Length: 245
Image (cartoon, rainbow, N blue to C red):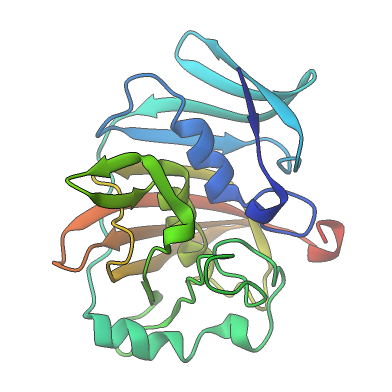
């Protein structure tokens, strides 16, 4: 089996969006329904390259030749949620999105300001007033990202990889991504329900801490009724963005 990360699903200019790549691999891990999957990215995911998927016991690996791109495994399901905010609060927060001023990866599939509707997810997390270290964004899944294998009662959904991508950068922007550019090193996520196309969602992120070059964050995706759709934790690595672009 192979997996190809198309150029449109990039994060930095020359590699795959971390959340989309991690979610694509997580979707191939056996027994993941309703369970948390941890994906560790070992190198920048190559674009437009057929990458081998190999399962070895409890670990599923994504390989570029002999090089390990990512590793995935099931983990215990206990993932804390970031408290929801009202849709109008999330909309207000988007207006203060730091990426509108300066973005290290403006072509990012999830949060890039160079990506239009149906091309990128346009998740623009801005600070939530009165909530320290917390950011939020509205997100309406576009029909261009519908997974036509996931149609229930004539309702279209996006797939697991897009759900992971929507939960990716909201964590990064809870940190000072403008002044401290980072890329995703590890993401652990549990998808409880697939996001519905055309339905307003709220995605919320929170900064948890820093240790050297590593930053730790969390994110939760809510549907229009305030129910948890998916939740995640992240480990980020501070980088020089010029080496990725």
